[in-house]
Image 1: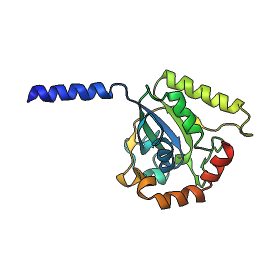
Image 2 (image 1 turned 120 degrees about the vertical axis):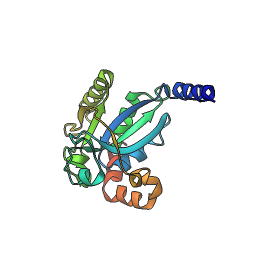
Image 3 (image 1 turned 90 degrees about the vertical axis):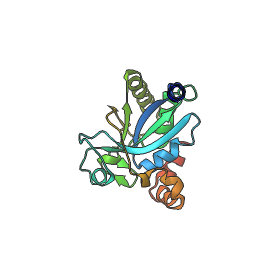
Length: 189
């Protein structure tokens, strides 16, 4: 039995060896989950919190602005199917990168946009993509999205996970009512 368990663990490890994670703060994490989950090569997108100094995070503390964390989505992906650079493109096309105070009607520090890099390569790619967007002329204002080193990820409470699926009508009303949907349609024609 021990041999079978060991073989199973080795196979499981081998299957997950090429998985990577990326972390993006794009305002409401429900919207970012909805943007990333259907992308080919994305294994999962989970709502959570990152960036604060507190050693833990939960929705109440983060939403009240007491922890310094941002609402983020942690994307697990297969780099053989989708690159980090392509994930950056998904990110940019699902936010207003010029809003320095948050996203749409979520206006506070915890809703600001941030790319959290995990290594030097991600940092370079994030900075290059931000520079290219700034120079593209697509937006009249400067890109406000921050680029910061990743910190510990705290998974959000279960009721936030897959909110856009479990509460699709409410989610669609939120997305439309916040102005996100209209902005994205106009900005990325």
